[in-house]
Every structure is written in structure tokens, then in C-alpha cells.
Image 1 (cartoon, rainbow, N blue to C red):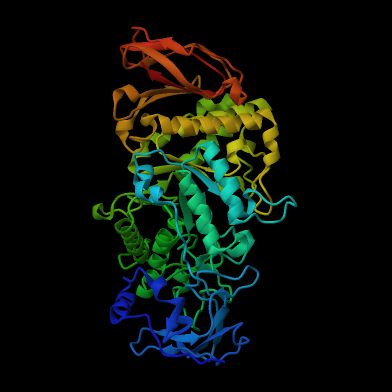
Image 2 (cartoon, rainbow, N blue to C red):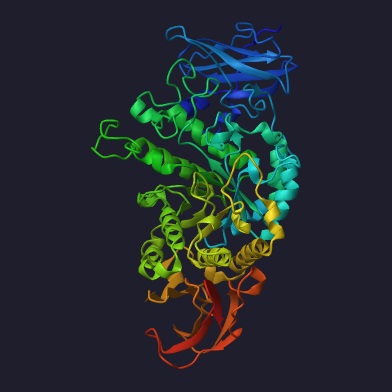
Length: 635
């Protein structure tokens, strides 16, 4: 068996950057790298383990024998162990066996920087290269025009393990399968982006991927890294952007993972009040440690670089920002100013966003942040956290709470819908109906709707129409696009058979047309984050549970008139104020027969008359179908 030879990919500059927390390409140095040394092919290994007394590489090439291939510690106090092992190559399976200098603890760990992992439940790392001949040049050169904040941004959120399964109902599809079936579905539906729930390697299926052990490896459940690249490539070739869920908020304490890595609290904060998450029973990164910041930011940039990813949605930001998150009095320690904000996290998130936007044009970062923390999506030079967008959790909670009410009570709760407009433009908000809203007894989105079957579907059509005309970008979880009846179950496929029924296929047609409307009408996206893009017509008709508003684009001719009827009562000759003379041309009606509606139809063109109304000089009388939303353009 070959011995380890002295070799290093690190320069003194690399080490200085690493110690300072400013090395954003650590994946090029740490981990396992296929190289040739003195004419002999092999693998260079490097791992950060400053509390180790010894580190050896164990694997299928040395019968998992510790001490056979001992790495050498660098002289510069970086805590990095490294060395070259000849005559092993692509596909070799390995771990690091670490004897700690602390109490003689011995750990056996997967490589934190491995590019590929064994298929769970196996836990070892696999030597792999990331060579790929990409053919998505057109998308990459032009993605800024798809990804800018003044462009349509409609996201389809996907859990790959349960989107669709094999004919036996159990077998996972592969990345190559998704490159055909998923891409075709998303393109047909008209979504602009796909967001994948975490694809980084994770050991435990019920975590849905949010408990990561392989931060640099797409899960082997569905195939190889190159096959995942092919899926992204196919999405790009069809003008569909790719967002990955990214989880820097916590990680599991599995024996092969990052926890207690070298016998010390290396990646996690040593103070349990900051280093342990009580909700998820997981460990929390030490955001104040320079090397950990380098690890995390390198990881974010890795997916943007090697996988051509177009955005990162950062999970559980609120849990990172607050020292007292899910903690009772006495279970947390205030910061140096006596407050509850985690200052190390705030600094880290700003640095992360600056690194992303500085290094990659045309990408977005999106925060799942559920509190009123200020300026999440404002630039760091203005004092913000620097995210491109923030999930609008308040809108989601208020809207679903309103829609679950029987229509007879809605007149008393209209403020639950109108309230969002008091803060909509304080952030760059994305409107999410995500996976979190269809699990744990909450019912599916369809299942929350009140009334009989017809009313449930009408309410769902109204909800989606309201969502797509409300300011902000959009996100729908898989299954919502055809009115999945049951709660989401990560262990089985979506209920695709429902599409044989007209009401469900009508929802699919409706969402497809709403995506088309969103993409074709500039008033719905050009000023979606600006108060200049929205104006109420009438928000005070609580008695009828109706409101109306204007969405505005850069050009006045693109402006749209939207009116929503939140009860099943047909409103005849319902008058609203209009800002100018002309003709109202109907562009969309959620009550149309093609969607499963009652087809209470007005004329496709309605004359605007000179009768003053709603404080305006002009008005029009409309026929409002039950539980419907209509969209008009003035010509």
C-alpha cells in the first residue's frame, strides 16, 4: 500500500485568506483532488482539523485501515492536514479518521468538501471530478435579463424525492428523468424558475434535505454530479432559471458529519446557547469564526460557479438573526449592546451577499425571514443585509387565514388582505405558497378553501389570481398548480391522476395562463417592488367583500385594472372609478369556463363613461362573477 507523499495546493496567500475568513474558493484547495505528481496519478487530500493529533485517510483502497495513509499537518498553524496518495483515483471511497488531541477522542468523518457521496444510508465520501462540457452559454450570457428585479419571477418549488416516482410508486426518478419530465412540465406551465428544496447530500429523508452532511455534493439518491448538471443545463436551455435552497442556519450531529469534527467544536459554536438549535435538535455554525465563514461563503459560490445556479434561497434566516430564537429567558445571552440580535450572523450575511453579487452577475439571493427585521433586501451600503428578495411571510399567513373563512364572514376581515399594502414596498417581497404550508396537519392549499367542491375550486382560482396580481414575485409549491387535494407526503409522488378531472385540469390551465399574463404584462413586473407600481381604486367595500386596484408599468398604456370579488354573490353593474376615458378590455377572468368557473361573463370590452366614482372623473359598471378576479387593460 502506498504511503502519503508531501504535497500542497495551498500558497501562503491562501492560508492568510483562510485565517481571515476571506477565502471564497476553498473547494479548490480543501477536499480530494485528482492530480498528477511526478508523472504519477493520484489524489491530493486536505482537511481542516486543528485539534487533531493525527489524521489518516481510510477507504476501500486500504481496507479502511487507520494509520496506513497518514496526512501531514502544515507548519503554519492553519490546522490543515494534507498529502498526496498515489495510484488511487476517480470513484475511490474514503473518510478521514481523526485522532483528537483532546481526551484521545477518535472520529471518522466524511469529507466536508467532497463533491460526491455514497448513496444513503452509506455515509462515506467519493473521489470525483466536476468536469462537464456545458452547453447553456446562451442562458448564462443573457440571464441578467431573466433574473433582474424588474422582470417576471415565477418560481415552482420542487422536492425531487416526491415530485414524481417510478411506476412502482417507490423508486426515485433520476436527474436524467427530471431533465425530461420536470423540465417539460415547468416549461408547459410557464414558470420562469425552479427552486429545488435542498439537493446537497443529506442522510435522513424525513428532514426533506434540510439537515445537510455533504455541503458540496448533490445527493447521490438521484444520480451523479454531472447528471445534476445536465438537469440544470436542460432547464437553462428552456429559459428556466434554477434556485437552490441553501442551509447555512444549522446542521445535524450525525457521526460522519461536521459536528464535533476533530474532537472539538470546530464548525459549531462552542456555547450551546448559540451552537444548538432547540427546534431542529441540530447544531448551529459559529458565524464569528473566520474559517467557518470561509467554508460557508465558499459553499455558496461553489454552486453558483460549478453548477451555473441562478439563485440561492437562504433557509431559516430568522433563526440565525436572533439570539433568543425559540429560547426562553435564561437560555440565551444578549449581545455586547444588550440586544437579542446575533451580530456575528448579521456580519456574515452581509459578507455572503456582497460576495455573491460581486462575483456573479445576474443572480439573486432570497431570504426566508419571517420577522420584521429591517432592510433584509436592501443593499449593504445602505445598512441592509443585502438580499435580493425576501419571502413575504406576513402576506402568506394573512391571506390563507382570510381564505379559510366562510364567505359570509369575510366582510369583517377584509383588512387581513388590504393590510399587506401598508408594508409591501418596504422590502423586495416574494409571495410564497411553499411546502411549509401543506404539511403537519395544515391541509393542502386546496384543502383550506371553504364551501362545497365548486366553491373550494373557485376560491383557489381566486387566491391564485389575487396572488399573481399582487405586487411581488411569486412562488408555488409543486402540486399547488393542479389543486392537490391531500397534504404533501415526502414519501410518495404527487397525485398526478387528479389531472383527469376537469376541476383539477382547470386549475392547471389557470396557473399556466396566470404565468403567461405575468410574463406578458409589464405592469405586473416592471415596478413590482415600487409603490409607483400600485394604486388602490377602492379597498373599503367591506360589505360586498370586493376591492379593486391598478397595477402600473413604466408606460401608462400598460396599466392594468384588477377587481376581486371574495364572495359567491354575483355583482351586477358593480361600478369602479377609472383614471381615464376609453375602453376596458378583459385580459383574464378566473370564473371562465375553461378553468372550471361558472362562466358569468361580462362583455370582453366595457365602455368607460364620464360618471365620477371612487374620487375619479370616470367609471365603468362591471359584472363580477362569484369568487372571481378580473384583469382589464384600458385602450
